[in-house]
Image (cartoon, rainbow, N blue to C red; front, top):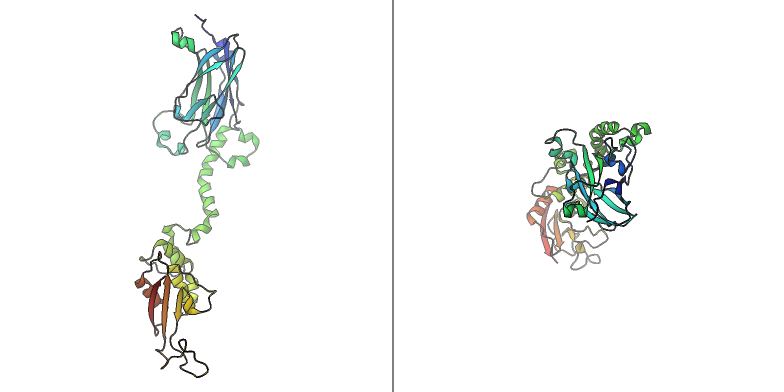
Length: 357
């Protein structure tokens, strides 16, 4: 039977991989044979919601023979926040049992990683404000080392080494970077400044993104009636949200060309999505074609048969609208007619044709 191991045969060092400015007493401390002392110093670990925090563990075997040890993690925080890993190349899997069994060679050290990850909504969760008494931002934990032969043979249920640490949950703060260094080292200052940051930061962000609230294409839906009132544009319930945004944004351009061929074509373009085809000279070949059938009549030397040679001159103040739609683009004819009735001069008449290519 092997002798029972004592705390002097194994030492444990806890080293946070990033130093926190809110830790007033420095970084990690050696927790070896001093772990059994009554006045034991503790390692302070600061973690931030939603950010991985890595803690390096070093187990030193002072004996002349290899030891099979078990690392157990316990604390006042939920154990699903943490995970112990001995393989640095693997990704930590949270939600699993944090206990790990390792073998440490004689007079050698074994390294492991202690990972922490707390939820992003930690400070918004109701369990932080209710439930347990006391400060819900500070937790206590300990890493215990057990000898495997003691656990299997029932020689001792007491750990051969225990290292305690403090786990402090803090919010990230950018305002404290503007403070003198002497104030950045005080945890109370960080928590106090965070109150003002959470109060003023939404206002600052609102001003930084104010342009998006004034653009109908990116503004919240609740703000569209206000933007439409700015340009005196009536909200049409028959149009979907995308068409309403485009029309409100281009309302001034529609007003500027109202009653003209250009204005009518532009309005139909915004609704149907058909191209303007400004590079096409011949009006009949455009996707949105607006032609006038009346002309100068049949004049020898000037008229062309089939184009502008019209007997009788045609109906005055009349125009034809022809839309060439794609097969996957459905056009509401009744809505197009209502748009034309709204935009054309009152004394004009028209005819509408919708062709599907």
